Image (cartoon, rainbow, N blue to C red; front, side, top):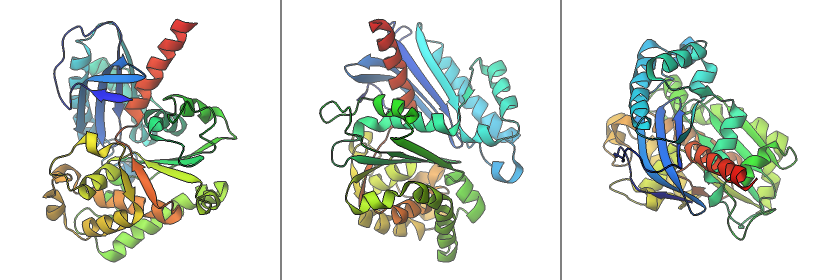
Length: 355
């Protein structure tokens, strides 16, 4: 469970208490920080920070992080380092994902981050990214169906998680925050798959202004080609036909569509997180957004100019997911990797204290 003491770039006291935890996620598109304290079975957010840095800009073509992209990321990470320095007794995990995994100069960039900001970023592999994403949103899974399909559409990659028999070991109607993540090591119960497409890579390959129907279909087909091997390996469709699968989406794409569906004039995490989207609504909203040009999308309150060039690529990936795995509805999670880091840090401390 997550509760918020602040919604965005808020300030915090120099010493909020001895048990404070922080999660820093440097992705292909965003740099995000959460600082939190344990509360009940979850945590209370003390401070948060998010900035679009587009670290993966041009990576697909060059295979390297560009100087400008690294500069933007360093600037955001300096802000994060400054905020983290105000806390004593802080337990921090800082990770970097797909852009740094793929880039030929990813390790060089991580060393530069350490020199210039003091932050020690860990480049995690796709399996660990899936584990953390699952730990972050597992509490939104319930007993509505025995199996769970979870996906995260990122900037440079899309993570798929297939978990069988989630009811096993559940406490009432809630999944313990770290229980399913631990299950990643149970090969019989859980599978994951990472495909190298995300909102940034799609926009760079197919365009970011008005996307013709033929180009949009090419995006969907490209996504389907990369997603199908997971279905062929796991036969998820057979379980869907028996109404035995629940679907959970954690990404900016699904939270954006949920905001449009709810007709929000301003983004509200409280209304979006945990909400449901039917596939009919997804298709309708996606078609409307995909038909717009950049300026029209930028004028939409819950898209704006920073996401207007990326949202169609995410919609195309989501379209492919919905076609390949027609569950009928999905639950929206405005939580993921950072929340997973916090859940696992807190759980580890609790386990150590109980030992």
